[in-house]
Image 1 (cartoon, helix red, strand yellow):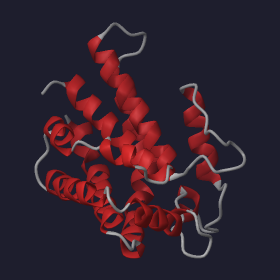
Image 2: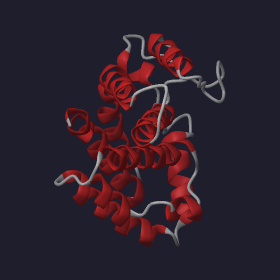
Image 3: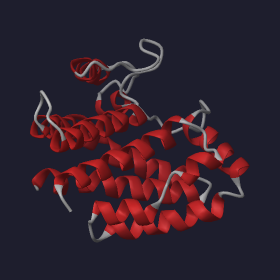
Length: 209
């Protein structure tokens, strides 16, 4: 597998995970996950492949239980009393409040690439779904820069992704996902949390290549 394929696979996976966090599940969303194709392109052994295949089986099974998934999504990510905090500031600052310093740090990094959170100043920019979406964007651009002439080298996009993961996403996503797994009432979100944690944990292997 060449770098273009690897970067594209990372982008697609991060983009899928971003959507799972940002949107209540629908059948079309579940159908977007093709574990066989994605994991063969990812080409990593161990937890990522095994947990991806396990999650894929749950996706197939749960397509008939969309209402249960939607209820679990609301409980995990929306309901004020039961939801897991999905923002970096809550996990990494002493105050554990929204719109902390990490919010504005990631906002600045988005701005460097001409991006902005969709509900800026209303919903924090450091939501895990937005951070994963930013990783998807960086790896997509790295893949495109590998395959065509670009004003920016793929290495610069990958370096940006590495720094973003090390300084932001990887600093807090794993304990957040542990809580998602422990609070989820459906196998879908339990397996998704495990798979997402494995993908984020494997990013260092991608950066090391």
